[in-house]
Length: 479
Image (cartoon, rainbow, N blue to C red; front, side, top):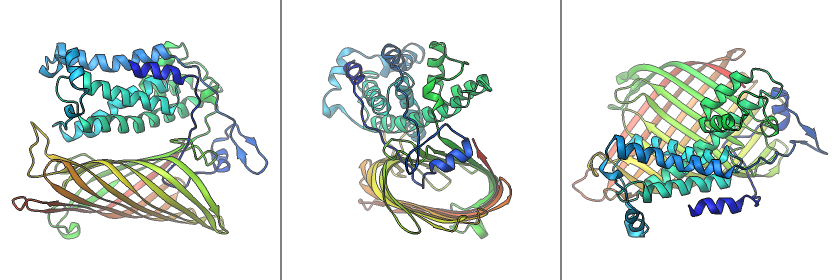
């Protein structure tokens, strides 16, 4: 419980905060036009009122953090009778040695999806009880560490520590921000119960704490009322054609249902130094031979600054956190990375613009398939780290036509598994035409490619490709 004491000490501290997003942030004027939020004018620009300081509830936060450990441990011990759940204090002492740490053999989806979701419980136990981003991140890291060293008798897992902490922080802050945006709509007393229900679905821990504090269903407090963020979403539904065998989706491909949700959160360009003031999420689904959820991509700016303003546009430097999950008929892939991006925005008159983003950074941890590996009971993939590089360009004309190119690449070397290295390419080209008000038609084509190169001759290299084309109808929503 030492970390709980450290958080208690941090109550009196005020750490700096920062923000970011992979694409250009909306200006305060754009947000004000769409949302009519409460803003005050500065000398040269629109400035948001300072965020109120919330009361911290240390005992409640610590209790929820502890229960996030106790519930799964008790379930494994008394319901599942899992042999790894018969823990003792000696296990905890033994796991403090650096040599005790290892890599686990859980399934791909367990490590890449379930662990980040568990991590957000640690995060929001503190975030929804008045603690800021950095204190809540510390709670997530501590929760993951305690579970790995004291929650089970097996060796603590390196990959679980990364996935639970990094993924939990990203997922947890997004849930906190979105639920706060929903609650801010109740400041005039309109649709309080409906907003409260939706906000509780998005962030159950915050809904629980509002219930415990007697605030559930009531007019929101000052902290939620000053939220000036804008949320937009695009829902696309249509058909796709793909091929994972012959690398020729036009002649040899299969047809399948396709759906995509793109979600954007923007809190304006007033504060580039606060984490998660800008983020976006891409979720792709479709029926295939081996998967339904095909892609989950999260991009959140952590820190940024405007470098200079030219006659035709603005130029930014930003630090981004990324979570990528791919699962198609050719291969699966999951990774957490941090990139530094150069963003340039060019304008021509009012309704034409070109946004360009180029970035590179580190792949902290990637999970990639290995057809020659069976690690433990169920792990058929390697873990590695390496280099990430990205590019995105978006051309918008007359607010009706949009042409975009999005590339995600990486090279990473195996840390756990067969001695190897991998190269990833992901390219998506898309054209979108607005037909009527919020309706659009979208045509896009892309190519995913994963190459595996193995040191030992008995393991042949592989090259797996997934080309595709998609035609869909889209509907755009502004919250």
